[in-house]
Length: 112
Image (cartoon, rainbow, N blue to C red):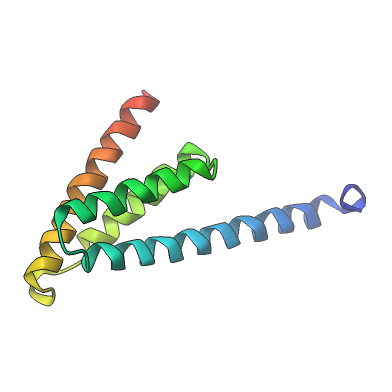
């Protein structure tokens, strides 16, 4: 049983679980950014962003994990070059950056 396992094995299993969650969040972020880029309007970008945040909260993720998700999403959005994107895609990326930066500010103010 789980209680009979060594501390090292329990630690490994907890890391494995966290790694799976991390990979899942990375995959979720990639799908979200793809949806954002191919959205047809800024309203759609906002809806995707709002839905993603609502979903993370509904899964009872720790606030620090959600904050890290937002931080990584902003970093990824900032890595895109306008020269390599269509006008609508670039507009969507800019809108998403504004929304996620706003979320970051809200989250930081709640921590203080």
